[in-house]
Amino acid sequence: MPPLFPSARCAQRRALTIQRHQSPPRAGLSRRWAGGAVAALCGLVSTHCGVADERMLLAADNQVVEINRSGTVTDSISTHGHSGIYEAWRLPDGGIAYAHKGGLAVFDRHKNLVLAHAAKNGPKGTEANSCAVLDGGARFALMDSGVAQIRVVNRKGEVLSETQLPELAEDALHSRYRTVRVVPGEKAFWVAQYGKRTLLKVAAGAGEILQRLLLDPMLKPTSANHMAFGVSPLPGGALWVATSTGKQLLKLTSNGDVARAWTAQELGLKCRYLLGTQQLQNGRLLVACGDYHLKTMEEGADLLAEIDADGRIVWRLTRDQLVDQIEGVIDSKSGLEEMRITNVHAYDSDRLEDVLQPTR
Image 1 (cartoon, one colour):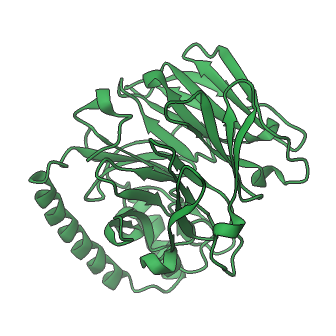
Image 2 (image 1 turned 45 degrees about the vertical axis):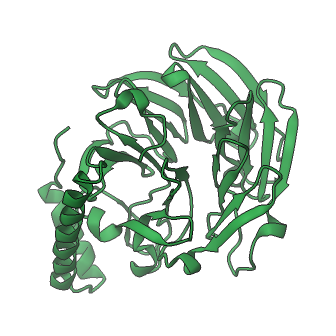
Image 3 (image 1 turned 120 degrees about the vertical axis):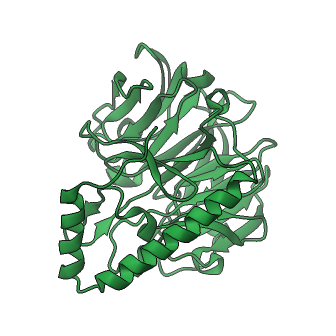
């Protein structure tokens, strides 16, 4: 997959955006070149550490972008008019599956759309926002928040099962449900009730609530509202949780006790949110930091972070590395360009048969 480079129109638009906000373009450019040189060196070092073929697929609101560890864009999908792309997954056959506001989209390795499963219209509107890949891409579980339902569909688009979730009539459409993940070794799902700051473990199909975790008693006080967003189940029952605007990470035991807890400030992250997470095979955690609704560029400086067991950042992707490679979204209020990275899927691009297994 050859690297993609920004178009002349893209570069010109960004130059105008920089001028409008009176940022020093030469200094910023120098920083980006310096950052690129460091990232390139890191890439060479990584070659000897066995991670040269690692790729990360980023869900970025209106597009899906693949990068390598140096921050270079290696692939993308952005031509289907979908918005609200919160999650994207590389598949063992080289294709891509993602959840967007309007439903589920699955593509083959040539980027042909092979499955489009629409979200249903509920009493408060339509919004799908998460999906889980099952059986190596033979089936998919779609979180359809608008109707509070998880639907499992096959490659033909046939609905194989429906798991009804508790109705959240008092919550706005955007504050109902978020992430859906399969519970390892069980016929069950973890889901996040966004506005209620609650995690539910529900039986697949039956919808019986097997476990309920209220996050409020576990969280550190903050001026921003906590919202339950990222959920990463681990073998043995442990669970990583990220709280969106509250910007906190929790690792919970199988009993629901807090094993570790960090705020973005304690981690040293400059970001607006903590969103989707992925546990790597080496025990470290990848975290997506969406820069929605920026007020200043600085508060959205970090887009991804890899965090070790002691809460130290061992690698990060910054907006300076990405901003000249992809078309971001210009916020209508601030006029600032936002990358909007909500989820990350890391894998070894030379071993697609293991693409759904943790890397490194």
